[in-house]
Image 1 (cartoon, rainbow over the protein chains, first blue to last red):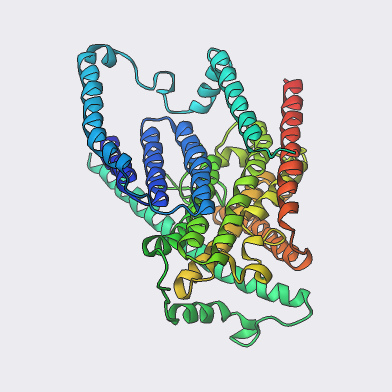
Image 2 (image 1 turned 90 degrees about the vertical axis):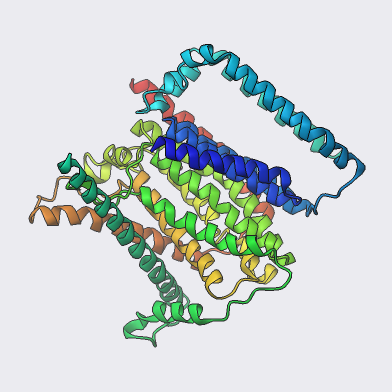
Length: 168
Length: 353
């Protein structure tokens, strides 16, 4: 069951990601990204991290990507145009992406032993009630990173407000 | 081995049956909610409402359905075809899927399958919130792909409105989750079923502030009056579904009413004790096990029905908000109030130990 879900939704995520790159129209790209997010949520769910899956759907697909689509609609962004720069991106980008892919797979393969011994999911593994586990981890052992992240987001919000504010 | 295979077949069969029955009942409810709205609205405006087709106009939904089904499906030339077709499907699909985690009766197991709930999910409440937030795409894409300025304005309004009110909506439910200590909808219902009416979250749990925040935010989420700016006829023709006709229009229409039913279900589950009786143990357990299994469903349906009636009453009573009023109401009033409610609830819970 888990394998079947992994194959189906992994393929869907990959297809969505590729479609995101190849589509010319920003709204189609944004929607492909939504497909990627949803497939990732299903993968999290199949690994037993159901809270993470729900958060992924609500935060990424339901809020962030809706804002993406909203902004694209608001600006009425048209299809992207082909310029010198985009041709250069094609000629350099595809070999570059292939090189990064090779590098990452090399690291994964050479560090196979180390990766196998780590318990993926770790503290979330039991899958029964991982909301309690996630929250107790967040508020005890991971408290400092959690708070620092929230301050970081607050700074980003303030920055956005300052940038968007009109001069009086 | 053979025995377990047999069990699996029964499980599968019962599950498929459950899905089919719930789907059919939900669709019928949607059709008759439309009739209820037209009848009640008519009475509130001192007229009859539909009364010609069948006794008391009861066959009106069937005739409406047939009309919409047989109408020509117009496809304007300038639309973005795939998204134009996809949008009503997203809207209707999302609104129907969220019913699947709603427990509409007491836990009743037949052959190990809980017959009054399609899926008992650990994070049922988050599933409903997630599906609701995906439903926005239906409206957003319909407006954009129609290539029509009124549709686009309607869907922009709607998207902004739904994103803004989603926060207040989600935060208003945190108090209930804190009290129940779980996101499982069954557990939340069980946490308020001890003494009938007085242990419901809205009365005994002192969550009435949360309830009113939820109610207002949910009205905005479902684009209903007094927050129905996305389809304000006087300004935007018909808003995001201006270019839609025939079944595609009907799908948006059904999605709206299915969403109303979902909101009614969630309000019932979270604040009004779900399928539990308002009298608690005051009424003796009469009748056989069948009556005892059906009685909670009756209470549940009654509560949801009252919420639908409230929806219609509000629509007949309140005038539409202005757009800036809508935004400032959501961000400056509902959101801080919801946060204050969370702090007060968690404070009380911490004091109690």
